[in-house]
Length: 108
Image (cartoon, rainbow, N blue to C red; front, side):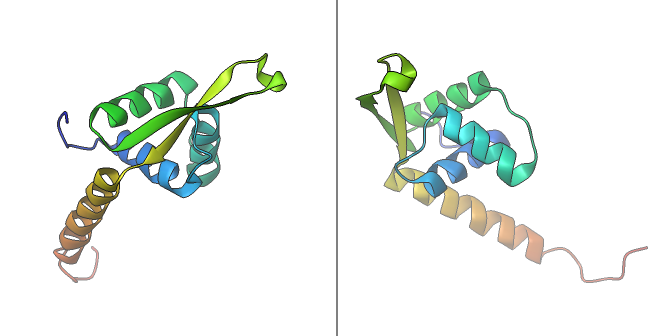
């Protein structure tokens, strides 16, 4: 497995992949990111992040069935792995710990 560090965009793609469960492929991930964040992302950026996440062992992919709507091409479907879920849990714990360290003083 490659490095386990998750960049901000990789974390977002991994979260969305987990949410989409067995319907996560490039287009659905990009659309979900747009819907959930209001952020427009390119399909190539999503594919690059998915490839990196697969190299790290955080997602695995399989080819779905061919459809006429795609001109007979098959979709590459991604699912989050146990290692991916653990990585997200670690990021959440770290962020929560850091948020808890912010002093509860009135803002100036």
